[in-house]
Length: 443
Image (tube, rainbow, N blue to C red; front, side):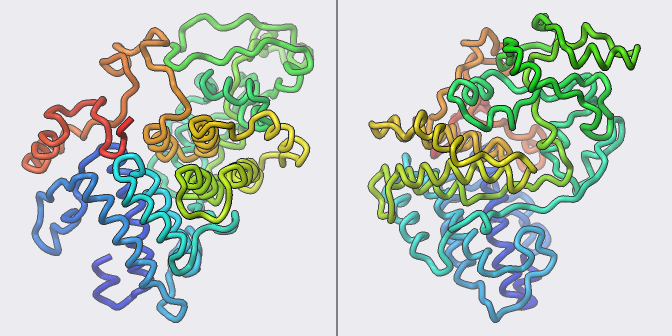
């Protein structure tokens, strides 16, 4: 950022400032107070122990930075090179800046409602506008690289890191299961995305470098009416597996491959579909679907938006479904399927029902954007999640019985920047705890 400013690269500098705000939002929404105004100034200004800014100060800076950066972007300015999001499209960067203002305004809407309303409405009227279609989605382009077991693929930044984590170190023995919280929300609501996210695989023949050779038993399980068994969050891998079923597919495979045991056709626990395990899946910064959910909630609050909460909700759900087709190779949800789902899962009647519907759908949308999923659940309170204590866990996992609301600062921070670290902890209650809520998390 410093070099681009020094060399007069106005557009490059503006895009970098926008992306720096986005990256800082990930940090502060996970940890709370953090260095920002003085961060990265060691070489430039010899500030080697930057102050930890408060979240209130950080969010105020976000709005100023995004407004200034958007205003600095010019179609006649320098070319934005090396851009893996918008390929240098200045108009798209303007839309991202303004759309991020919507996100951050909604984030502070409970702690500073007047400021939130002002920023949200000003962002809608700002030069360049906000996202108006999926073509505006801010997605990081990644490459196809091998996820080889036993190799250092996690450091290969060319591939999608989330896909790598979901694929796992030993996918043949530890594939990605879907927990009951997510699966039951989808299945019990009749969501047509249920078996887009969830599949039932036999993984005994699975490749260690890609999700190849998985035996898909989903359609057989559905046709036979076999009970499905998602695991509760926190369940241990060594707990008893559910009973198997008589699989025609596995019988046929076993006849042709003696190494395959028919008794292993017990995969009635839903697993994450192959579509979400690919190295070249996009990294999600922000989407048109999210903007619609933000607009829907703004309408609930009575802010100046041109449309109804119900209309934005429906558009957001449709865009969320299409997002999977456009970016993960999933089958397209038909208009009939969508209409049936909306008829049975409308926005509700009271404002609280509407808020719950909007943010539950945002939670589903953010399946591939987990940082935003967690932040929005904490901010909105929806969906209502069970605590570890309610599942019978907690002490072993987190040292407590409630759902953590932040991550603890890295231990080395207390050595590298003790003054800033200690000041931040004093402001946040005196301890580096999982259970200190964010400034904007007032519920």
